Amino acid sequence: MNKKKITLNSLGGLVYSTNPDFKLEETINEVTETLLPSQQKLKILLDKKQRAGKKVTLIEGFIGSQSDLEELGKKLKSFCGTGGSVKDGEIIIQGDNKDKVLQWLQKNGYLSSKKV
Image (cartoon, rainbow, N blue to C red; front, side, top):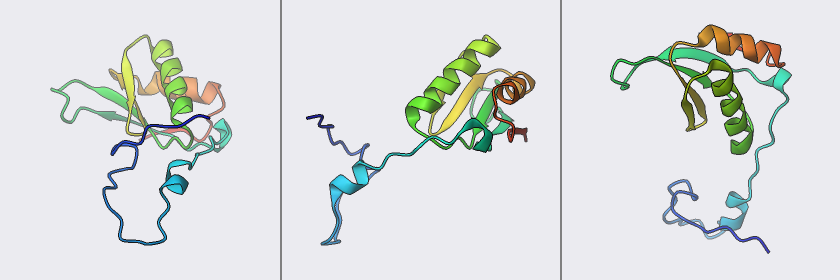
């Protein structure tokens, strides 16, 4: 039996519900299926807000599980030869790597990807 530890973060900020029909288990067990690469519509953009003037490449719009998002982020970081992270459903790659990221995504089946 595989039980998850329930924390406030895992509840999405839920503290109290007045709905008498609310079932906590149903909301936790929602699983997002990852779309095929050809169905993903990823946006690649350059950002430097609140980053001490340093540029980062953001990849947004991924639909799927967190583990698949982290795996894609790892592959992109490796291809670009830079660091980065995966936060809040976005992949963050250090530096201005929009062209490299777009090239890799299109080569690997993410044909609907575009630079913004």
